View (cartoon, rainbow, N blue to C red):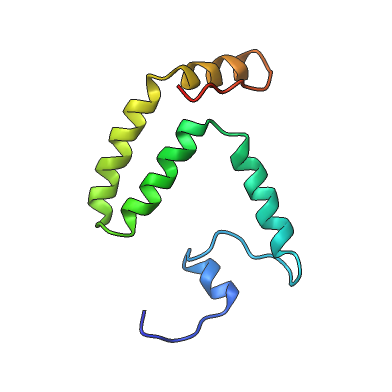
Length: 98
């Protein structure tokens, strides 16, 4: 915040980053994360991206309100029902982005 440099462990401690990987493993870690995201509901990923962009421009209080609004919208989608059913039936979900 004041222009000082911090190392990776300090960034993790203050929750600036979520994970530290060894040198040379960043691309693999990023690809693994991207693959995990790719298997999620497209509508929920879109909502998460919108919240991230929103939080760059607004205070956290606004972001929490927006998060609640999007959660309520997502809760009434076909993908939400598909996700629950797939979990209960122990199968991979078939997302429809609706």
